[in-house]
Image (cartoon, rainbow, N blue to C red):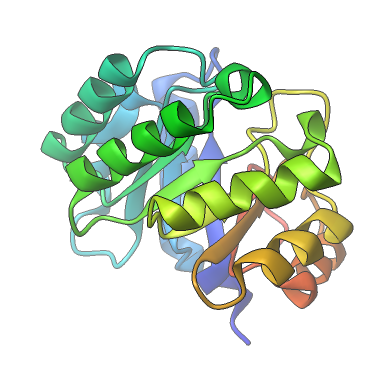
Length: 209
């Protein structure tokens, strides 16, 4: 197994400078990671620096709270794809989900997935804020909306990924979607634990490979 192919190397800190992002890009190129994951403002820069390297660009949408309107998330997605992003990580509207407004949550994911077209959409459900029953329901909604991935966490809330949550998510989606584990994954041991639990992509801002 080449773990580098699992890694979305992430730099989403609000204080990240251009030099910080360049360092992440250069490390990702050296290690042949799957993607570099950035905020919208850094997308075009990453696309230009990663062209013809085999490392893709991932942009976050509705990050980190997921509480903006669908229209805002759609516009962010359009801008990211126009800038050259290869993958989109969007945050589910957690408040609407907690309200039980599952039709809204499903419709929003479906609309963004349609805007993404052939580009993979990963939906962050923020597992640390959900019960086990809610994690299952969120995964089912993501499946219904036909997103490519269900993702555990933003890394900006009260906790990150756990192996138990990944196992639960994988048991729910089976082979109908992929799992991305993120948040608090800072060692090779932790990354391998998540992969063993069923994760097919690892989000991390720590260079442990």
